Image (cartoon, rainbow, N blue to C red; front, side, top):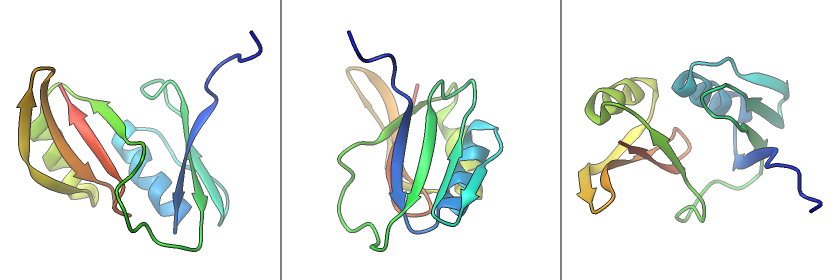
Length: 115
């Protein structure tokens, strides 16, 4: 097999440094900024690099891919991330797989807090 691993997930955005700073705070790791067009985070918690690449257009539709972030306490983590600039979408929901909370990062990218 030629594939060795998943190197990184790349998120298109308007401001890579700011978005990397937000996600770095989410995962407790510093943002790395190469230049105004590219930044990333790496942490043992993510196990994969998450990179942020500048694009000229703003996000206008729902993500085709989103991150599920596992947490122990959804309400506490939701409140912490609201303080970092995230937005909660609706209330916490529970389905057959368990509880989750849909969130938006500062550029409107959807992600979920899951337990």
